[in-house]
Length: 126
Image (tube, rainbow, N blue to C red; front, side, top):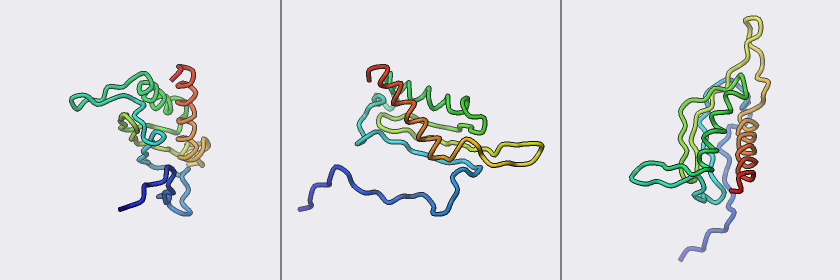
């Protein structure tokens, strides 16, 4: 008989060592809710029905590209307990030559998204 899994298990990072996540490129991200709680809606007959918090997640995701000139968004999907999406980071152009990305790394972008969703959720009483 196996032992029950502890509530907090260590996960090995899948990030590449010595890789600069501020680099230009398309990044596939998955963002999960705490303990995979189904906070964003439900699936009925194969369709995702977002609740208010799920709609907030969608709105904040779409807002990211408006708030950052070097960030584009590709396909994404909000599920009951997670979000999958593609974030494209572009290098800013200055006088026809490339410069470094100014608005931060992929981690910073995702962290700001999560913080914004949390603030709006608390304001909504979710």
